[in-house]
Amino acid sequence: MKLLSWNVNGIRACLNKGLPDLLTSEQPDILCLQETKARAEQVELPLEFAGYHAHWNSAVKPGYSGVAVFSRLAPLSVRHGIGMEEHDQEGRVLTLEFPDFHLVNVYTPNAQNELKRLPYRMLWDVAFRDHLLALEATGKPVVFCGDLNVAHQEIDLARPKANRFSAGFSDQERDGFSQLLKAGYIDTFRHFFPDQTEAYTWWSFRGGARARNVGWRIDYFGVSPTLLPRLKSAGILADITGSDHCPVSLEIE
Image 1 (tube, rainbow, N blue to C red):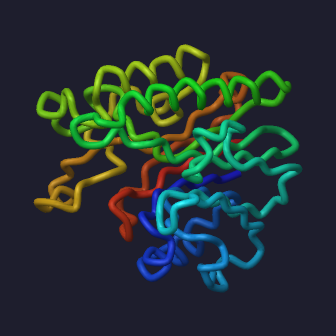
Image 2 (cartoon, rainbow, N blue to C red):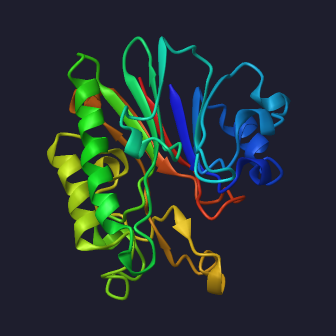
């Protein structure tokens, strides 16, 4: 089974910037999108999406945030949000239950300039981790993916010293991701490539950052430890443009 995750920075724009081509070339069984910035009825999907079951969770605020999942296999159930009203207004989580696992697509809140939203972000990290653990407690393992808005280690961004107190690389956000790993979840890219550098998934639009590969790795696939024997590969599709992020992939038996 091949899974792809991509922060498209607006699905309507990305449909004209390579998203249909990605479906054709990669043929994913499941495609998870973040920052869709649209409701389902606002989007006319092209023929490449035929055969996929579509599920959306959009923000209350128009044109903001939002996630979507397109799956060849019909899920047993779909859950919007994490069941907490204070966290479910921005369309940031979709949970799909399949026969063998739970899939969670997430677009984590950004701590923003001067870390002004960091206190909320810390509450979010705990609530999201509790959501994953509650799913785990049902007896099925979890696959989570999306834009987690944090570069965990210094090798996960090009300029760690300059960004030491920036959103996405604050000590608090990095510790939040560490707590996720301590809960047992596996960063699949680092499982296969523990020491690889210059492997990024997001680049600023400013200053030719992408051409110079001055980026951050903030998009992830994470899995429960019981799925470790079934992992086949994890990757970063850095040559796919159309957004300030690139897709990430996971292949699992």
